[in-house]
Image (cartoon, rainbow over all chains, first blue to last red; front, side):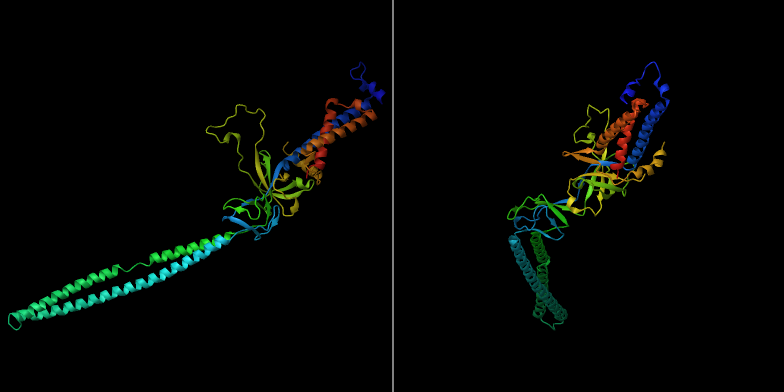
Length: 359
Length: 86
């Protein structure tokens, strides 16, 4: 065989193809066959890739929240451990409730005091209203007296000319009438004074309402001492232990929602053209390499910060612009199906996805 | 030109068996599957060339400059389609 190879050097005076026409034909068929196979395989691969855009640079993500107490205090009970699974409603931790219980009792006492004050104010106001009524009655009485005195004077005064009545009688009647007039004025003044001194109950009512609101707040604070899991979750990054002082609003650990797993894949702009929400996808998680899970395209990101939008007081224009430019990438959110075994789900896992666009 | 991929798609989906991971872990780093496919394709193309040398056809392969590169491309894509599409 090697001798044959050596006996067929190209570019010699005699034409080797003419000597071995069958071998020459076979060689051409095989050679061009390779080229045709390569072209066919390229077309199929390119069609496949265009129908099934793939991205290998994704990460597995879940909804996460930082848990922070809403009241401050030392942690009294902490039944959970880092990386543990908790269910909705499970106790996460309890802050020493003693000061908050005292606050509730104090607020209750304040409310009772305010209610007592409201009652007293009611009684006081009732008494003042009675006084106003008495003043009204005095006024009525004085007015009646004045009417009688006036009638008496009107009857006696004409009798003076005919000397049926003495000047003394007329003068007395006049004085009586004037005195009655003064009595009416005094009674009117007394009535006004009594009416204006009736207190309003609004202040006592407002104080009672404020005390009730304070009690509600104190009870709420007491309730906040017990922190429960808002959903089925995994505990992560626990930075507190029993007895430690937990400050209001300061995060003590993270909860990962175990029902919200999705994959964030940075697809190239050319790839997302054919994609749409609802397209099925195959997802591979590197925590279980070689296994494939079903997913669905949930949404495609509407933006990714380009370099030119970096924060600065002037536009950022790099001097060196790339001659070969890389495609922009946009995050595609792929929701994982529920049948993925929970033990392989970790936030940040490398994920590769293939979206089946069907087009 | 636009229609040809559609006609070939059923052929392509024949290869779409549940495959291997499209990123391969080697020594703590992930390599794209096509890199592995090129390595295997190169190996297969080399074997084919050895066979052709043995049967005495190698010297007659025309066009010689692109025949074997085309074979490498073919094997690479074949490996990729069979094992790395899913």
